[in-house]
Image 1 (tube, rainbow, N blue to C red):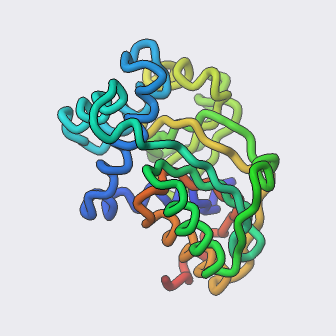
Image 2 (cartoon, rainbow, N blue to C red; image 1 turned 180 degrees about the horizontal axis):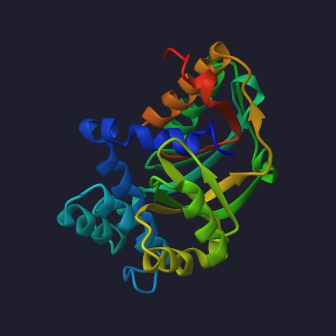
Length: 248
Protein backbone atom coordinates (compact mmCIF):
# COMPACT_ATOMS: atom_id res chain seq x y z
CA UNK A 1 0.00 0.00 0.00
CA UNK A 2 3.05 2.27 0.06
CA UNK A 3 2.68 5.47 -1.95
CA UNK A 4 -1.04 5.86 -1.50
CA UNK A 5 -3.04 8.34 0.55
CA UNK A 6 -6.43 7.85 2.13
CA UNK A 7 -8.43 9.90 4.59
CA UNK A 8 -7.06 7.90 7.52
CA UNK A 9 -3.56 9.20 6.77
CA UNK A 10 -4.41 12.61 5.32
CA UNK A 11 -6.32 13.53 8.49
CA UNK A 12 -3.14 13.38 10.55
CA UNK A 13 -1.81 16.36 8.60
CA UNK A 14 -4.81 18.39 9.77
CA UNK A 15 -4.13 18.02 13.47
CA UNK A 16 -2.09 21.20 13.90
CA UNK A 17 -4.67 23.29 12.04
CA UNK A 18 -7.46 21.93 14.21
CA UNK A 19 -5.53 22.73 17.38
CA UNK A 20 -5.13 26.34 16.27
CA UNK A 21 -8.85 26.56 15.68
CA UNK A 22 -9.58 25.08 19.10
CA UNK A 23 -11.80 22.42 17.57
CA UNK A 24 -9.95 19.35 18.81
CA UNK A 25 -10.60 19.98 22.51
CA UNK A 26 -14.33 20.63 22.06
CA UNK A 27 -14.78 17.55 19.87
CA UNK A 28 -12.83 15.31 22.23
CA UNK A 29 -14.79 16.58 25.22
CA UNK A 30 -18.00 15.33 23.61
CA UNK A 31 -16.72 11.80 22.91
CA UNK A 32 -15.18 11.57 26.38
CA UNK A 33 -18.56 12.41 27.91
CA UNK A 34 -20.34 9.77 25.84
CA UNK A 35 -17.66 7.13 26.49
CA UNK A 36 -17.78 7.85 30.23
CA UNK A 37 -21.48 6.93 30.35
CA UNK A 38 -20.34 3.30 30.20
CA UNK A 39 -18.21 3.86 33.30
CA UNK A 40 -16.10 6.75 34.53
CA UNK A 41 -13.08 4.62 35.47
CA UNK A 42 -10.69 4.37 32.50
CA UNK A 43 -9.14 1.22 34.00
CA UNK A 44 -12.37 -0.68 33.40
CA UNK A 45 -13.77 1.32 30.46
CA UNK A 46 -11.56 0.74 27.42
CA UNK A 47 -13.37 3.25 25.19
CA UNK A 48 -12.94 5.99 27.79
CA UNK A 49 -9.27 5.12 28.17
CA UNK A 50 -8.77 5.40 24.40
CA UNK A 51 -10.42 8.82 24.24
CA UNK A 52 -8.47 10.08 27.25
CA UNK A 53 -5.24 8.94 25.60
CA UNK A 54 -6.17 10.79 22.42
CA UNK A 55 -6.86 13.90 24.49
CA UNK A 56 -3.49 13.67 26.22
CA UNK A 57 -1.72 13.22 22.89
CA UNK A 58 -2.93 16.67 21.80
CA UNK A 59 -2.19 18.20 25.22
CA UNK A 60 -5.81 18.70 26.20
CA UNK A 61 -5.80 20.21 29.73
CA UNK A 62 -6.55 17.77 32.54
CA UNK A 63 -9.38 19.95 33.83
CA UNK A 64 -11.09 19.78 30.42
CA UNK A 65 -10.97 15.98 30.54
CA UNK A 66 -12.30 15.89 34.09
CA UNK A 67 -15.09 18.32 33.20
CA UNK A 68 -16.16 16.10 30.29
CA UNK A 69 -16.25 13.02 32.54
CA UNK A 70 -18.22 14.93 35.17
CA UNK A 71 -20.93 15.60 32.59
CA UNK A 72 -21.41 11.86 32.22
CA UNK A 73 -21.98 11.61 35.97
CA UNK A 74 -24.94 13.93 35.65
CA UNK A 75 -23.30 17.29 35.16
CA UNK A 76 -24.94 20.01 33.09
CA UNK A 77 -25.16 19.29 29.36
CA UNK A 78 -23.89 15.73 29.29
CA UNK A 79 -27.32 14.14 29.23
CA UNK A 80 -28.18 15.96 25.99
CA UNK A 81 -25.35 14.51 23.93
CA UNK A 82 -25.86 11.46 21.73
CA UNK A 83 -23.82 9.62 19.14
CA UNK A 84 -25.37 9.52 15.67
CA UNK A 85 -23.82 7.64 12.73
CA UNK A 86 -24.55 8.53 9.10
CA UNK A 87 -23.83 6.48 5.98
CA UNK A 88 -23.79 7.73 2.44
CA UNK A 89 -22.17 8.09 -0.95
CA UNK A 90 -19.79 10.94 -1.71
CA UNK A 91 -18.33 12.30 -4.94
CA UNK A 92 -16.83 9.76 -7.36
CA UNK A 93 -18.99 7.05 -5.78
CA UNK A 94 -16.97 6.73 -2.59
CA UNK A 95 -18.64 5.16 0.44
CA UNK A 96 -18.56 7.18 3.65
CA UNK A 97 -19.40 6.61 7.32
CA UNK A 98 -19.66 9.73 9.49
CA UNK A 99 -19.69 9.49 13.28
CA UNK A 100 -21.08 12.51 15.12
CA UNK A 101 -21.85 13.63 18.65
CA UNK A 102 -24.70 16.08 18.91
CA UNK A 103 -27.15 17.75 21.28
CA UNK A 104 -29.58 18.33 18.41
CA UNK A 105 -30.08 15.40 16.05
CA UNK A 106 -32.30 17.34 13.63
CA UNK A 107 -29.72 20.10 13.21
CA UNK A 108 -26.89 17.64 12.63
CA UNK A 109 -28.87 15.49 10.19
CA UNK A 110 -29.79 18.55 8.12
CA UNK A 111 -26.17 19.76 8.08
CA UNK A 112 -24.70 16.38 7.07
CA UNK A 113 -27.38 15.83 4.41
CA UNK A 114 -26.63 19.28 2.98
CA UNK A 115 -22.88 18.60 2.83
CA UNK A 116 -23.41 15.34 0.95
CA UNK A 117 -25.80 16.91 -1.56
CA UNK A 118 -23.66 20.02 -2.12
CA UNK A 119 -20.81 17.81 -3.34
CA UNK A 120 -22.96 15.58 -5.54
CA UNK A 121 -23.42 12.77 -3.06
CA UNK A 122 -26.35 11.53 -1.03
CA UNK A 123 -27.11 10.13 2.38
CA UNK A 124 -28.13 6.50 2.61
CA UNK A 125 -29.98 4.60 5.28
CA UNK A 126 -28.46 2.53 8.09
CA UNK A 127 -26.45 -0.34 6.61
CA UNK A 128 -26.25 1.18 3.12
CA UNK A 129 -22.43 1.22 3.15
CA UNK A 130 -21.46 -0.31 6.52
CA UNK A 131 -21.08 -3.75 4.94
CA UNK A 132 -18.15 -2.36 2.91
CA UNK A 133 -16.17 -1.73 6.10
CA UNK A 134 -14.94 -3.89 8.96
CA UNK A 135 -14.28 -2.79 12.57
CA UNK A 136 -10.57 -2.84 13.37
CA UNK A 137 -8.06 -1.44 15.83
CA UNK A 138 -5.70 1.11 14.28
CA UNK A 139 -2.35 2.02 15.82
CA UNK A 140 -0.56 4.88 14.08
CA UNK A 141 3.19 4.59 14.50
CA UNK A 142 5.95 7.08 13.71
CA UNK A 143 7.85 5.98 10.60
CA UNK A 144 11.58 5.63 11.03
CA UNK A 145 14.42 5.73 8.48
CA UNK A 146 14.02 2.00 7.76
CA UNK A 147 10.26 1.39 7.44
CA UNK A 148 10.73 -2.01 5.80
CA UNK A 149 12.46 -3.30 8.93
CA UNK A 150 9.75 -1.76 11.11
CA UNK A 151 7.04 -3.49 9.09
CA UNK A 152 8.76 -6.88 9.28
CA UNK A 153 9.17 -6.50 13.05
CA UNK A 154 5.49 -5.65 13.43
CA UNK A 155 4.45 -8.65 11.36
CA UNK A 156 6.62 -10.84 13.61
CA UNK A 157 4.63 -9.47 16.57
CA UNK A 158 1.44 -10.79 14.94
CA UNK A 159 -0.32 -7.66 13.65
CA UNK A 160 -2.86 -8.25 10.87
CA UNK A 161 -1.77 -5.57 8.41
CA UNK A 162 0.61 -2.61 8.06
CA UNK A 163 0.16 0.21 5.56
CA UNK A 164 2.90 2.72 4.82
CA UNK A 165 1.94 6.37 4.40
CA UNK A 166 4.11 9.42 3.83
CA UNK A 167 5.25 9.95 7.42
CA UNK A 168 3.51 7.24 9.47
CA UNK A 169 2.83 3.52 9.52
CA UNK A 170 -0.75 2.40 10.02
CA UNK A 171 -0.93 -0.85 11.97
CA UNK A 172 -4.21 -2.77 11.87
CA UNK A 173 -5.15 -5.34 14.50
CA UNK A 174 -8.39 -6.93 15.65
CA UNK A 175 -10.42 -4.48 17.68
CA UNK A 176 -10.52 -6.93 20.60
CA UNK A 177 -6.71 -7.01 20.77
CA UNK A 178 -6.04 -3.30 20.32
CA UNK A 179 -4.81 -2.70 23.87
CA UNK A 180 -2.59 -5.80 23.82
CA UNK A 181 -0.87 -4.85 20.56
CA UNK A 182 -0.39 -1.26 21.67
CA UNK A 183 1.54 -2.56 24.68
CA UNK A 184 3.50 -4.98 22.47
CA UNK A 185 4.53 -2.23 20.04
CA UNK A 186 5.52 0.15 22.83
CA UNK A 187 7.58 -2.58 24.51
CA UNK A 188 9.36 -3.14 21.17
CA UNK A 189 10.39 0.53 21.00
CA UNK A 190 7.86 1.87 18.49
CA UNK A 191 6.58 5.41 19.03
CA UNK A 192 2.77 5.35 19.13
CA UNK A 193 1.11 8.47 17.73
CA UNK A 194 -2.53 7.43 18.03
CA UNK A 195 -4.64 4.42 18.99
CA UNK A 196 -8.27 4.13 17.94
CA UNK A 197 -11.13 1.90 16.92
CA UNK A 198 -11.92 2.39 13.23
CA UNK A 199 -13.91 1.13 10.29
CA UNK A 200 -11.46 -0.21 7.68
CA UNK A 201 -12.62 -0.33 4.03
CA UNK A 202 -12.74 -3.84 2.57
CA UNK A 203 -12.26 -2.48 -0.96
CA UNK A 204 -11.07 0.94 -2.12
CA UNK A 205 -12.07 3.29 -4.93
CA UNK A 206 -8.99 4.56 -6.73
CA UNK A 207 -9.24 8.23 -7.69
CA UNK A 208 -7.86 8.62 -11.20
CA UNK A 209 -6.95 12.30 -11.55
CA UNK A 210 -6.22 15.49 -9.60
CA UNK A 211 -9.57 17.15 -10.37
CA UNK A 212 -11.54 14.22 -8.98
CA UNK A 213 -9.16 13.97 -6.02
CA UNK A 214 -9.68 17.66 -5.22
CA UNK A 215 -13.44 17.17 -5.18
CA UNK A 216 -13.20 14.17 -2.84
CA UNK A 217 -10.83 15.96 -0.46
CA UNK A 218 -12.96 19.10 -0.47
CA UNK A 219 -15.93 16.98 0.55
CA UNK A 220 -13.94 15.35 3.35
CA UNK A 221 -12.74 18.78 4.53
CA UNK A 222 -16.29 20.11 4.69
CA UNK A 223 -17.38 17.15 6.79
CA UNK A 224 -14.29 17.40 8.99
CA UNK A 225 -14.97 21.10 9.68
CA UNK A 226 -18.45 20.46 11.08
CA UNK A 227 -18.37 20.85 14.87
CA UNK A 228 -20.50 17.74 15.43
CA UNK A 229 -18.41 15.40 13.26
CA UNK A 230 -16.02 13.18 15.20
CA UNK A 231 -14.72 10.56 12.76
CA UNK A 232 -15.03 9.94 9.04
CA UNK A 233 -14.32 6.66 7.28
CA UNK A 234 -14.12 6.55 3.50
CA UNK A 235 -12.95 4.01 0.94
CA UNK A 236 -11.06 6.25 -1.48
CA UNK A 237 -7.40 5.82 -2.42
CA UNK A 238 -5.41 8.63 -4.05
CA UNK A 239 -2.02 7.73 -5.52
CA UNK A 240 0.74 9.98 -4.18
CA UNK A 241 1.64 11.34 -7.63
CA UNK A 242 -1.93 12.56 -8.10
CA UNK A 243 -2.17 13.99 -4.60
CA UNK A 244 0.87 16.21 -5.31
CA UNK A 245 -1.07 17.92 -8.09
CA UNK A 246 -4.21 18.58 -6.08
CA UNK A 247 -5.07 22.23 -5.48
CA UNK A 248 -7.72 22.83 -2.84
